[in-house]
Each structure stands twice: as C-alpha cells, then as structure tokens.
Amino acid sequence: MSSEPAPLSPEPAPAPAATPPAAPAIEPEPLTLDLVKDDVELSGFISAADRVMEGLGYTEHGFRHANLTARIAYNVMTRAGMDEHIANLACVAGYLHDVGNMISREVHGQIGAVLVYHALRERVSAGDLALVVAAVANHEEENGAAVSPVSAAVILADKSDVHRSRVRKGGQVEFDIHDRVNFAAEQSFLRVDSTAKTVTLELTIDTQISQVMEYFEIFLGRMQMCRKAAQVLDCKFKLTINGAELA
Ligand SMILES: [Fe+2]
Ligand SMILES: [Fe+2]
Figure 1 (cartoon, rainbow, N blue to C red):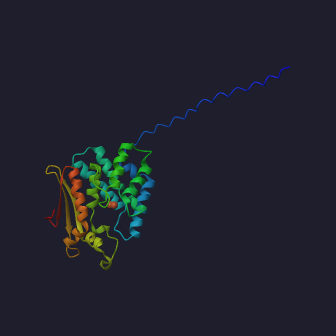
Figure 2 (cartoon, helix red, strand yellow):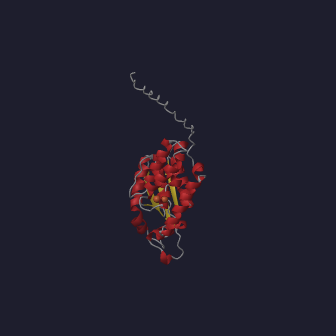
Figure 3 (cartoon, rainbow, N blue to C red):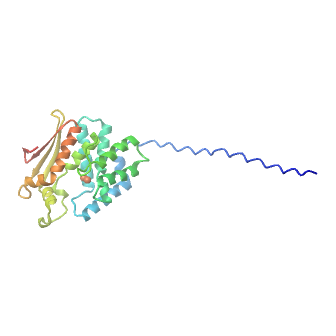
C-alpha cells in the first residue's frame, strides 16, 4: 500500500483587508476671536506666558496686550480694505501672537506658532490656520518679517502697544530703558488713512520721563519692521511723537 503524502491543508484565504472606519466628517469652525477666547487651553497659554514674562522682568504681555493687539490688527485690516474673513484672521493672530513666551522668550514667535497649530488643527481649516501661525511666527524683528497682510497687521498692532499701563514696577528707581519709554508713553494710536495710504503711529511721550532719543534707541528696529509691514498693505509708515513727524 503506497503511502500517499497527506494532502497539504490549503493556505487559508487571506482575510479581507479591514476597511478603516470612516473618519467622522468634522466641519471646520470659522476661525474667529470668539472661538479662541472660549478655548480654555489657549487662555491658559496667555496666562502662563504673562507669568513667565513677569518672572523675566518684562512689561505686561497678558490679556490686556492680547486683546489690544487683536483689536488693532482687525481695525488695520478693515481700514486697509481687507474683507471680514481675513480681518478676523489678523484679529486671532494678534490675540495669540505672544503665547510662545509660555515656554521661552527666545524665538517665542516660532514656539507660539507651533502651540497654536496644535491647539487648533482639528477645529479650523488648514488654510486659515496656516495664515495665522505664519503671522504668529513672524512678529518679532529678530527673526521675522511681514510675510502676508495678516502678518503685517499683527506686526503694526503689536509694535504700537507702547503705554505706561504695561509697566509693572512701582518705583522709578527700578526702571530700565524699556520701562522708562513705556511709562513715558501717555498715549499711542495707530491711524490708518485709507485715502492717503498711510499708517501712522502717533505717540504722546512725557519727555520729563524719557527723551525721544531713548525711544529711538530701543525702537529703531521695530520701526523698520513697521515700515516694511505697512508696505505689504500698500501703505507708507509714519511716526509722530508729540505731534512732530519723525519718520
Ligand atoms: Fe512678541
Ligand atoms: Fe507682543
């Protein structure tokens, strides 16, 4: 009797490839100031960033500065003729521009952009978020520049917030030059003239506290950045101090 080899058991049929479950369709939300203000994580970033800045001895960088930068950036965009959607993106970027200080003052723009990206990437459209994070990343003169109209509006809004209410210290004896210049600034207003195509930073400075030269000493780089930002909005940047046109 011949011994037939036992028939090999047939290869099991490959299991049908599992169909991945359909990702739930998430409708992106409009990226507005209300959306980011209601976000607990982002609010926590702003508070934490201001605590770090206080620890480092810097001027106020909390909700006051965030809200003011947001409002000015929005106004710059609408006065420059941009539509509501793009003006809202500048508003959001203005509100969030300094959150990177929560981690480090050094390259805080770039750090903040990554934080904002992760906080919002599952809620808003990628295109809108890209414009906002680029504006956040590029708002400081050491390592940024006006890369779009949204970015230009954030730069102009941020650099125009020079005011005595930002100084935290009580006694003049502790003031450094930044505190002195901020404390001397009694008023600052960013005026956009859409007909003349000018963006003018109008400052009122108490020259008993800080001389105009001190202002230039620390703000020359910022003013050059503002000049280029205004150009991106097809405008000319001007600076007046106590009514005199200086640039
Ligand atoms: Fe900043
Ligand atoms: Fe700022």
